[in-house]
Image (tube, rainbow, N blue to C red; front, side):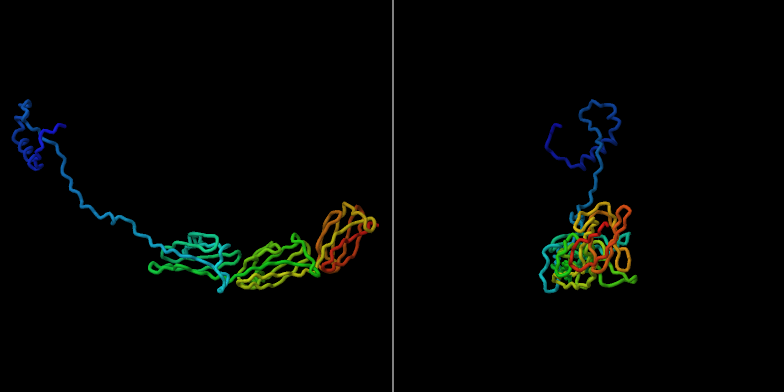
Length: 319
């Protein structure tokens, strides 16, 4: 485009001239198209009317209000906040389609920091098998800052001996912990099973029913043990039992004979245990028993007695 003049003509004047020229000179335009002074009609678009500009802030999303809350947990009222071993879970109080509370956030360790929108939540903190759940209400105009949870929990460490403080091999010991209360079927609820000796179990304060098993036969002791908040309870259970090894021998002190089947009965004649082998070993509770050995076509017996803490070999003579 070549700029012929810098004069600026008002647009209204141009439109008026074009309109007049088009209405009065349409015939002459058709006859003399060589006239350089003829102004052809302009095909101008109409003027668009724009809406007034609105404030951009009117389209901004509403500002979210978040409250930062620090959560900590204590074993007891007078104890220090725990620095590790905690598991925090935050739940929506409104159940989902399956009737479960949706979990919103989790944290592990000691103290936890969460950002909450105003509303209601359920917060659960667990310390091992101990735990507590609390409803938390977050207000838009009132910060919470810090919230402390009192677990009312302690620790329980179990061990056992036999006889006069005879040490029991840890591999032969196991403990199960039950609630002390019974349900409508007279059963106790299992809290945790297969607890090893000297293992610290974190529990809520209260009384628990502990079953200690020494070996796999009948050496079982039941005890009620109390757990105190903020303290470690160490309990040693006394087993009145012993470990024996069965041997079928041709002479006293001789080598054990293989291919032998064994049955153990108590004083009432009830079958207690069965095994096969040259020298099976087992733990039996204190009392009187009979060992029955079967080797080929021979059947041999021997009565013996279990004394607490006294481990020994029970020999059955072949002849």
